[in-house]
Image (cartoon, rainbow, N blue to C red; front, side):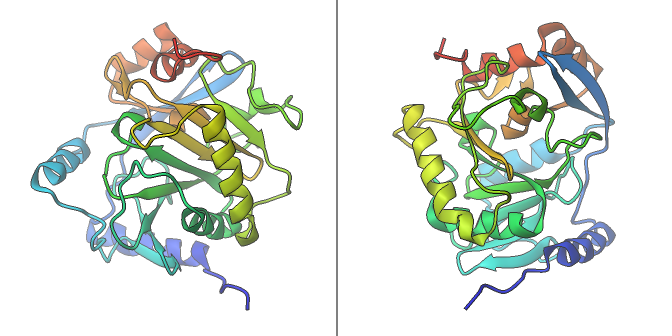
Length: 287
């Protein structure tokens, strides 16, 4: 018996409307600047004004509050599988940003499982997007409860899903690194047209192979996982931020978030690819 269609697009639209009206959804207003580096047009989201996201997450950690147990009912979108459900990201920069959370508590630095990929694949079957996982605080995770994330693509105005697809366009099957990406990573081109529910086992085996190639054997080793319908990439992490600018998985897709014009200036001066190299290590090594 096939799994039921989630009708995610309709559910997201309805939940966004309700959550905006109640104030549960608090989008971060930004304007987008483009910074060209190494053949990639990086998208830099500049906050128009600061909100209380960092204060809220810090307060939750200090008080031991888990916002996912239970999740805000106004942010609840849908149950995805018996083990996972999806909610809206309360402080979203990208519209219709989903969090795919485990039903019961699991640590955010745990390795991904078949159940995790089943839930992510079920969402990506219906939403053309970029899925990602921030494995631990140093990888940019803001909550300790295990959650994957999914944002709609394309991230920019162009036809390609992410800014770094311009660099990945020349890769051939079997390639596990992209020469144009200066930061340490391993990637795999996926051998199918698009992700569906039936892709979960293949995605898990690809993920485990990339972990092995990076010699990530412990949950104490932070990393980011990124997934589109065309490729999967893993990036090891050394640092959570660069001179005050926090980097999560979206940064390695070519999308950065800065607080103000001073941080934007630092991004331009230091080059986005160098910043990513500083938090992930140099391609071909950890230095």
